[in-house]
Length: 333
Image (tube, rainbow, N blue to C red; front, top):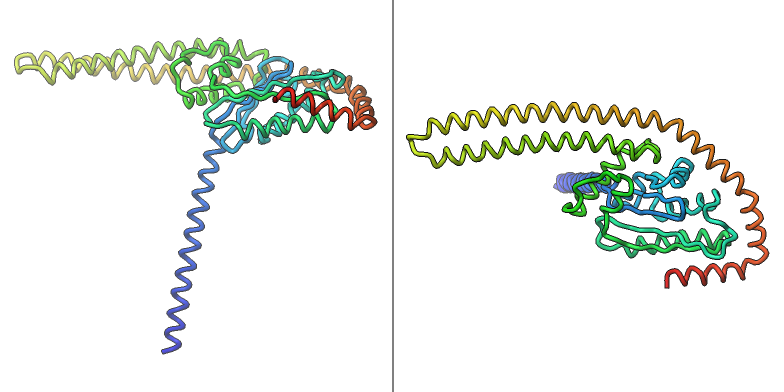
C-alpha cells in the first residue's frame, strides 16, 4: 500500500512539474512575441542637431531602428557611425562624439548647444529625455568641452516627416499612430539612398503615389455607384425591379473592372517604385564613398586640435569641469 502511495505521489509531482514547465514555456513565448513586436514598432523620432542634423527612429525598446540625415553634414555622420541597435541615449552620445571629432563642435568654443527633439506616440518622454541629456552632457564633461544638450518634446510628427520628404501630402488629418506608420514607410524607402538624392527620389515617388490615388478615386466612385444601385433595388417596386437589376449588374461590372485595373496599376506602380529605389541606391554608392573620404579627412584634420585640447583639460580639469557644469545648468534651468 505504501509503495502504491509513493508511486501515485511521484506521478502527481511529475504532472505538476510538467504543468509548471509548460506554463513557463507559454509565458516565455508570449514575452518573446511581445518583445519582437516592440522591436519592430517605431514609437519615437529623435532629431539631433548642431550643424549636422540627423533623425533617429526609435522602437518601443528604446533602440535605434533606423537613422536618416536631414542635411549633407548629417549624412557624413551616418556613414561614419554605427547607430543601429544603440539605445537612444547612446546614439545621441555617438552623434555628439562624431560631431566633435569632425570639427562641427569646436572644443575651443565657450559654449555649444546641442538641440535634441523627441516626438512620437509615447505619452511621457520625461525619463527618456533625462537619459539623453545626461548621456550627452557626460561626454562633454569627460572630455572637457564647454557644451551641453537641450532636449525638447513635441507632438509634431508631421514636421519630422516633412524634413525628410518635402513632397509629403495628406498628413493634416492623420493620427499620431498613422503618422508614425508613414514615417516608418518613409525611412524604409530611404534606406541606402543618400541625402542629396532623397528629394529627387520622393519627387518620383509622389508621382507614382498620385497615380495610385487617382486609381483609388475611380475605384471608390465605382463602389459608390454600386451602393446606390443596390439601395434603389432594395426599395424598388416589382415594376422597376428588372430595370434596376440590369443597372446593378452594370454597376457590378464597372466595379469588377475598376478593381482589376486598380490591382494591375498598383502592381505596376510598386514595381516601378522598387526599380527607382534600386537605381537611387546604386547611384548613392559612389556618393557614400566620397562622403566617407570627406568625413575621414575632417576627423584627421581635427585630430591634433582635440589632442591638444585634452592635454589642456587635464592640466585645468577642475576649473574647466566647473565651467561645463555651469553652462549645462544654464541650458536646462
